[in-house]
Length: 476
Image (cartoon, rainbow, N blue to C red; front, side):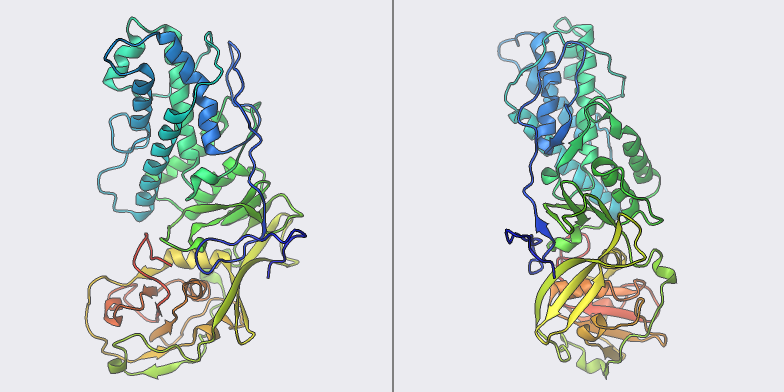
């Protein structure tokens, strides 16, 4: 169990009964006001920012352009409003001016997740920009901004190249558009993107331009292959903690100076496939940076011990949710680092610890939980058929307490059902079962809905209960 600091502060994840996740920290940005830019330079000054403060830091670019364009004609849209409408189109995913376009119907759920995330972040950034109060800016600001091929709306073509404009204003607005695009894309990995604390080295590059290379790598993977957990985590590390140790897997989360990044599925609610969550806490306050890596770098070659014995139940007795065999009461959940001599410096395994009222404590690798969830299947929405073959009912606690190293399977096939009403227990089970043919079935639904779910062979493992419909892969 995570021990509190001297002041007694511990952090609990939202949902799932409030998993204890380390020592709380007070998220603080050290940016209090934007600097007045110099005539031939603009950048973010070094410090720690909230995403909203980064948007405010971009504002001198836009303010200079608006100032130099002069007064707006009566009964017309303001130049500021028109230019921010342009940025809104740049950040949307379905416009001619989009910098990250997606087709109307995205079949791949990993891309569908990123599309929804991009739309959500883009709207927030533009909203913050519209709300930004006027601050200091340099009227004579003038520098060269490389063309990034960000398109103007027809209305803004006339505005930026017409009589009101001057040649260098397009350079400044191009930089503003590009910085907003860089910020939108940098925040794509994070479910709670508005809470992430962003360290910025103002001497490394102009604004967020130091992220251009990792952004290019991430978007190339997004467009040419599919989104992977490794690519999402690599992008998050490039933004928040680029000096973390390297491992063959790349890890699945990390602790950095200003908090902790973990798979968003651990917070429960509507689940995400690849998104991460910023947590204002540290699991080890004595270290600044820790990479959380998987217990099994490659699950395929992990040991596969036999699942603990269960009770065979005939098909006619499987029409409703089965009673949980000898189910103890779940009491508490926490995250803890695994002490191991095999861990490299700055690399650690992280486990979910579940405590029950019978004194038992189950420990499950957090990386494997996230991996098991990504590889799991959801039961069909439609009733396929009534169950026709017997199944084996297993105790969730027996599975979680299984002491042999590896991921559990059933060498002789069969249909294996693990009933549970606890969402956190259902998630933990995903970290113990070999993640090849595991199906999630809500408690209120029928076993017949799993007939065609998963892969067409045995063994098939069905976690019945602990999950509802919702999100990309269930609601915990």
